[in-house]
Amino acid sequence: MSKDRELFKSRLGFLLIAAGCAIGLGNVWRFPYITGQYGGAIFVLIYVLFLFLVGLPILTMELAVGRASRKSLGQSFETLAPNTKWYLNKFWMIPGNYILMGFYSLVTGWMLYYTIAIFSNSIDKNIDQDTAGAVFGAMLASPLDQFLCTIVVVVGSFLVCSLGLRRGVERITKPMMILLFALLLFLALRSFSLDGFEKGISYYLMPNLDNIQNAGILSVLSAAMGQAFFTLGLGVGSIQIFGSYMSKENTIGYEAVTIALLDTTVAILAGFIIFPACFSYNVEPGSGPGLIFVTLVSVFSNMEFGNIWGGIFFLFLLFSAISTLIAVYENIIAISMEVFNVSRKKSVVINCLVILLLSIPCLLGYNLWSNIQPLGEGSTILDTYDFVLSKNILPFGAMCYILFILLKRGWGHDNYLKEMNEGVGLKFPKATIWYYKIVLPIVVFVLFIQGYLEIFVEG
Image (tube, rainbow, N blue to C red; front, side):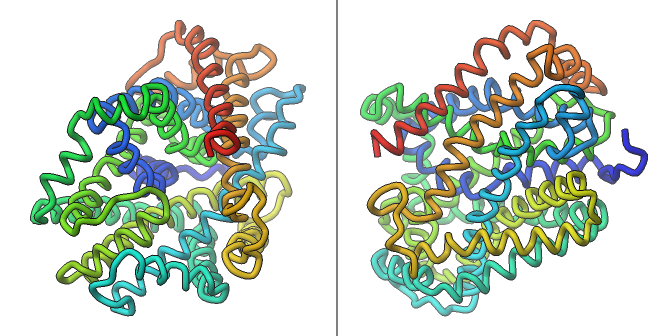
């Protein structure tokens, strides 16, 4: 271990920050919708099964590689498997972090815009979905508004990282994550008083075999498997960096289970907020940005004290998005420091500028460059960023970690298990190697194929 390697001050800090990296907007604008669409409680059970059988093992791989090497993705492969060519993989995995932040930083800027707009009552009351959609469209049509909000969240998050792990990332993110969970719980409890609570929760979580039959069991399994894999943001080393900062007091399996449970709790509670609100105001819930910026904005505008409840909801979304920004920015900063041997402050300045530049094509794709539609009619530059990352780099990155801990010319399963099981808590048996060799590669390959089918066949 590097003598000057900074470690987390507390276990709670590690867990909340690692969970913050995993917890993102997908927990809110995708999971609740597909749960209601694909069978309610039955889908949740299938999702949790995939989360622990697929997502959890790969999560432990990233954490184990980080903790054993005490390095970021920038130098971990060559540290654990010297005199091999494994280090070459970082040259396509590292760009994944930049692509992710290129569009995620912009979307976080949208959250800031709406948090301010709703708290300040600048959005009219009692608007319908069409009007809410026009408000969202007006924001997208303004490059300046988007860029100013993006600058605020990007520069602010990088300033946190510039202070270092303990003084910046841990000290700021830990209370922010605690407040995030408090806001989430508060809003979920508030839903109990809404007229549509019973209908909303029934649609959301009651077992619904008809929905499963209508969608088809293969579609249900694919949706659950995909959500379980992508919700943890695995494949680009963004979780690995926090493994490099964690102590060895507890086993990695024990910590990974806790992170997965925190991530799932946020996803499930989000549905307790969204569906009762939609059913109370007879609004059809959707998925993606439309759910957040159109459907729910319309709901809050028609709700008594809607600017307060809506403002708190968007503040919760803003915190969840910023927690991801800080986590991935820390990974990018650490990678640059190791690869180019530069100071933290220099790495912060350079990467801040790079991320801002990468966000510009995404925001222009909704206005000045809207005629550029790389994935076909109706697609945007942001969609292309997302496609390159989620349908290509993430699954290939996950496969890279799987092979790295399995192959003798890599790190090897024995070394992985030794690192995994050091400390107090859940320990994995050696027999897991057969599961890792057979099941995990097949699942990741299926996800890769399914991603292309969704874009070019089903879409």
